[in-house]
Image (cartoon, rainbow, N blue to C red; front, side, top):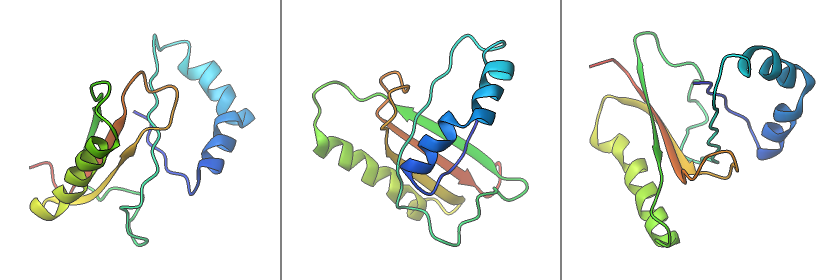
Length: 121
């Protein structure tokens, strides 16, 4: 998994076409990968003081949800609300980020979340 954060969609777009990024993908990723999936989302659930680097000894859980067709925005909003509410219910979560995918490379996955746990337990 490659996890990266950008301050805006525009910065993500600039990174995706940057010559250094493109050369790494062509020279190092494509020769060894059969397939790649990208899920991109905008989040407002990180605090400004949250570190981008997980603390030593932490564990990360990455989840992708492929919702059934025709469920509507209210169902997506409800699921995102449940994911965001997990932090308050489970004390071991150091940080959580979730959102609706906007990438065309997500292969049908519509919601993703990344949770950083303080410890592997």
